[in-house]
Image 1 (tube, rainbow, N blue to C red):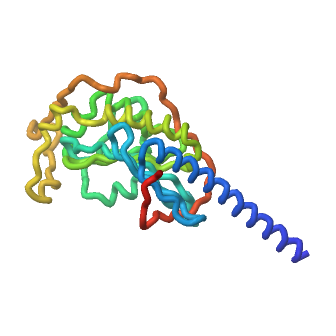
Image 2: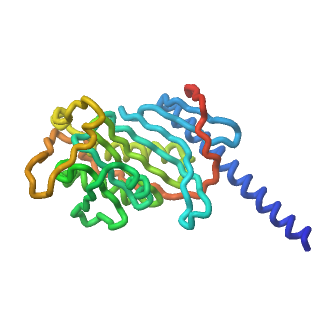
Image 3: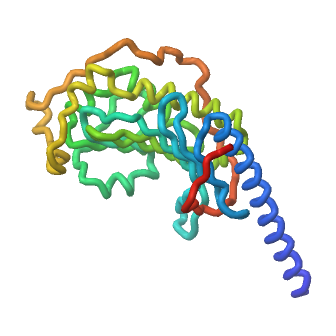
Amino acid sequence: MWILIWLIITIFILSVSLWSFLILRQQKMAWKKFAVKHKFTYAAGKMMDSPYMTGRFDGYTMNFYTDTQGTEDMRGFRYVTVVELELGAGIPVKGVVGTEKTKEFVNSLTLTKDVIFEHDKWSADYIARTQNKKKFKAYFTKKRLDTLMGLLGMKGTTVMFFFDEIDAVLRIETSDPLRDAEKTERIMSRLVRDIKVLSPTSAEKELIPKRKNSDDDDEEDDDDDDDEGDYAPVVDADPSDDEDGKQDVEPEPVITAPLKPKKSTKAK
């Protein structure tokens, strides 16, 4: 009897290990193909290590790697694929917007003013926080807010958009290992269209104050009826009027090793 139980457990462990290896192999092949096509820096790591790649896609810096995320019962963790997109410029106000699982991180920041957007797709599970509510709300025009809600509503993902006057980054976590290079390219193209909408116009960039020291981060607005610190968005011609081709990132199971390589090599 005990031999049978041991045999079943052994077969199960071997099956999981084999499945993990096959998924990881497909992921590495897809990422390398994407990296070669777009001249990204790519590192495969050791045989059971997760890959890593970074580079510029349509003018925006992107980073791909594997990270861990705690399970809902807090008894374990799972591996997720992380994609980070850098806007390449700051935004005239400091803030963060994210889905439910980002709340712990957002609560660790020094931002103190909660914002609730008046939008039909805004969820009580989302979180938005800033130091200047007037500037924050003014920056998110209707089109930007529609785009932001679309990102937050992507299936099977954890999304966070955080920004200040210096940097702005969109971070997406998904259980999808992105093991299809063509699908990855379609998703990245969609994300770039959204990033272009969320990015400040050239006129708005002129409104971003130059920092003299780190204390400038602590700027706060007064009560909502105070006019000090008002900000009106300056809209240029929008380079991203194409609303077609939107798609969700569908979750897929993946078991990989979350090791970010110490050295990276240029994809050839």
